[in-house]
Length: 243
Image 1 (tube, helix red, strand yellow):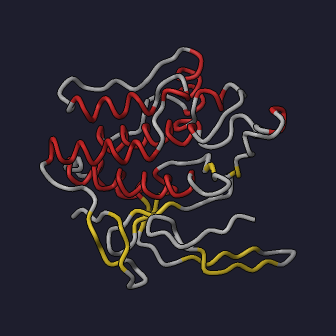
Image 2 (cartoon, helix red, strand yellow):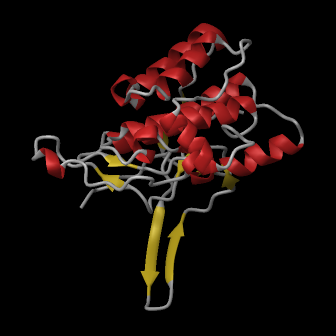
């Protein structure tokens, strides 16, 4: 059993109960999902400032880095805006671990390493290797993260005019990726492209993503994306709150 300690960017499970007819889970109170914010912004034609984009990206990456560095590592497998909640203090927290999987020890026999089902998760954010029913690792979450960044930066979901299955098939079979406008900052565009690279081995880890985000914030935004803040439990946590 994995021992999950409290992390400021993971939604806290407070308790659960189940009977033959009902299953109930109780988590900390959150305000809304990142998808709710994206939809509201689309209605009012609002695009996040780059400062806010970098801040949200850093929080998501921090939570995912925690999961991927657990022993054993935890693969979320359904990372998307709807599964990222915002607290009343504006902190991103990852939730919905119904499809999460503990990664097998790579030292075990190869046939036991990747007992994971294909086409698991949400098609529009699904890594190509998952759609193709191939062996995969935690790098599938990196791909999903790249698609979330695109959604956040563009104001619309990847391939908004296509059915999710068609979008996933285009990415997995045709090698297509969302179009990045030329006026986007080159460092930011490079981060997205690395995250959704066709080769999982070439996608950065979330630890590297955090370093890239901090470098981007220093070079372009002239600020430190990682700041101290008071967590919801009143304790001092290391994270990022961008207003």
